[in-house]
Length: 234
Image (cartoon, rainbow, N blue to C red):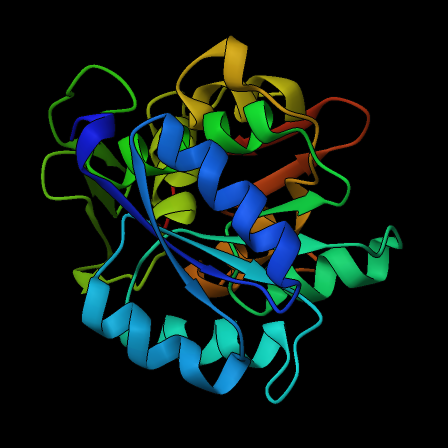
């Protein structure tokens, strides 16, 4: 997917901010559809079928978390949550609602553009070189079809969760730090922005059916990072 063909739906009630961001992205080849109210967002996303959704947390009508959940029920499109709140609980709430990433206001337009491009590439399977099917125990990860199964049962993963699982599966048995995972999932160290990856790991554990108190598949190594068991699912 070339940048000239990137389409983004931006859900933002601040008209001035929305227009400024849309103008900046438009100048860099990204077509932006602005939506002012939360209850109108899903319809526009289904109509436009964007590469990425930018979603403000605080919206009139439906709030950003509820909008995120509704979109996630219908489409596996990368969702970037935009929030003026800096509390960790608000960021976690957005991620647990199904968002792939978050950006805190005020944000750098250049950084936002880089994040959009990174998520769009990953969703199209262009975040790195293609790999063959990876099998770890009873877990199978297919990079070409962006699908994964555990004991033959398909896993319903977001694009971010799939990229995270793929990175771990390709390095099963090896402890990966948060920073390493961020770089691997982003596709480039230049796009390794500071963020909380722990919520994504938590959601991935849930989908793997792993006990969060005593995980056996996706383990936490205190002070070091995360590791996928080389005998996953057995």
